[in-house]
Image 1 (spheres, rainbow, N blue to C red):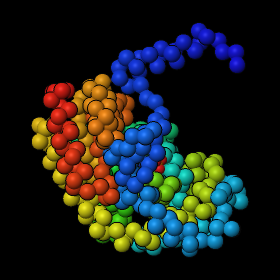
Image 2 (tube, rainbow, N blue to C red):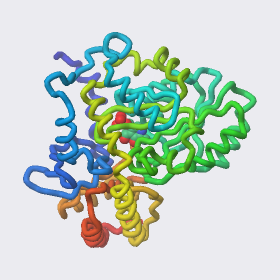
Image 3 (cartoon, helix red, strand yellow):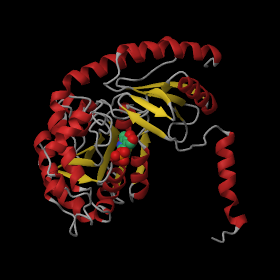
Image 4 (cartoon, protein in one colour):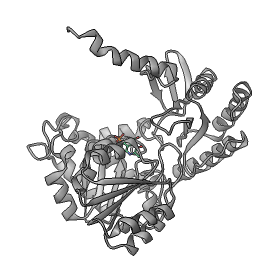
Length: 397
Ligand code: PLP
């Protein structure tokens, strides 16, 4: 290829800048095995996985699925979008299962949480819409907002007084307000107050509630349906989004909504219309895992207990930890220090990674400890000892 070198200089400059600020990213060659991850011949405890219940590495569960499936006829590609010839009974069965589980009118599948968030918001928002989104929402939601025609304002993280002031300010000026939040925040591991948001929605007639439960599905609630189930707010949320790539051990995403909204999305949502549908075989696997979700309560409880212990450990270092879930951040501030600490942790057998801007706000680089149910207390205690040794070398604050 004959690239004009000077026109590509900005790329090398950008990469140099990333390296200089400790924000350069590379792909790691790692192999996952249960709660472990292998890098070449080194085994580390995997603190970076979203396999929160350990189901993606549960070979017995996988074998049971294979036994229950006719592998000869398994369809590994949908070969088209749902609106052409890619609508299989596997998709419809999974959507029906979701609607039944959530006690809702309907559900619609997407290829990923990213597809869901970049597609739903532009579809449902127009120039007469205001989106009010929590300051810490995920990049996929931010991209969805950017692709929409709506005006958007971010409210301070979990600050519902700020949110209500914004609602009051815009309620008269626009046709609808879409309030967007995550239920478990992906980088801080804290929770939105869904009952409070539901009550707020009831006070203003033109407010719709959009909640992303990517990190809560499987992990929270009596049947693993998320924080909305846990807080009895399932019926209050207009767009209840969840993903399968984390605790559900699969791939894809869904929205739980009313029939009419589903029909509207099928007609208008670009990332749904213009993309090949999920492989039917994968939908069958998701259906199988979802059937097993209610039976995972012991794992959910264990995960909560080891996560609470991990939060205690972080707080013992003197650093505030907002976590209310199995995502436990250790905020060190500067990216370079976060990378150095992550490397030290890896040298001591803990595969924890630095999360840096732009994934998190400037000055809040961190180690994101992601705990999974197949870890035990002794893993967390070993980590405590190592973490305290490391921070003697790299004082924080
Ligand atoms: N929503 C949130 C809150 C996330 O944290 C993520 C991914 O980490 C996504 C959506 C994207 O989901 P997916 O990985 O299925 O694209």
